[in-house]
Amino acid sequence: MTTKLKTYGERATSLPNKTAQELLTLMERKKSNLAVALDVTTKQEFLDIADKVGPYICCLKTHIDILEDFDQDLIDKLKKLQKKHDFIIFEDRKFADIGNTVKHQYSKGIYKIAEWADIVDAHAIPGDGIITGLKEIGLPLNRGLLLLAEMSSKGNLATGAYTEATIEMAKRHKDFVIGFISGKKFNSCEELIIMTPGISLDISNDDLGQQYKTPRNVIENGSDIIIVGRGIYGKGKDAVVEAQRYRNAGWEAYLEKLE
Ligand code: 6AU
Image 1 (cartoon, protein in one colour):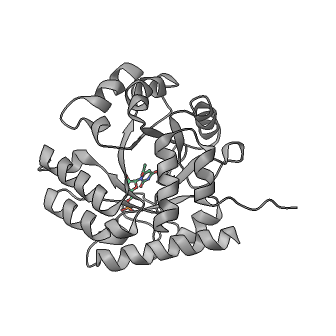
Image 2 (cartoon, helix red, strand yellow):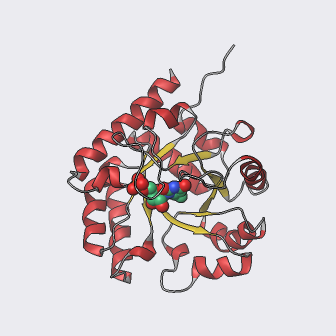
């Protein structure tokens, strides 16, 4: 007998982390498993697109350090858009240093990431100390962390034993680690949230090693959230039309999986 898959909403209670619970509940409420990777370099473009795609997404993923005119006003406006549209903010910082250094990178400097990002991510390469360091800052604020267990780019080294060790590391920190960046679900920790980048309905790669799969491909493999960047706001695209298209594709694949 096969056990019926849990819905996003049902899974919310199986995770101890508040941000994870909020994200899963929000996905159910908004009927969206779409995260937009908003990789643009000006504040105006960033805010315009965030406002346009806001109604269709569960998560807005940022690379805050690529904005040429970053200022506190941008963060204030981003928080207003978050309230208006109801989404989780994920700063894709990919921390990769020793615990003491990442603590500062997370909470200090120009960006003060911990003050506004609900979720951040980290590479497992430095060992458990990176999680312990980030946790000291993030957990009192109810933040969550994703570990990069796999990557979407051609020739990447996050495979095999490295991926396995990353999964074991996550299991030791279930209060703070809410899931993984990866292309599939891992059997030994099915409750953790899987976010998958490298998603396109139209193309299979870019010129710099990115490799794309469709929403259906990855959701069939157990992904929970599809991360889409240029597929939504790239050259000649209408961000609203594309956000709706990817939101529908992601949600339909999820409903089919539940059946
Ligand atoms: O859809 P794209 O190709 O325009 O954008 C993909 C987004 C970018 C990457 O920084 C990010 O997804 N990404 C990530 C993460 C953590 O999100 C990991 C990875 O392996 N590959 C990848 O593309 O913002």
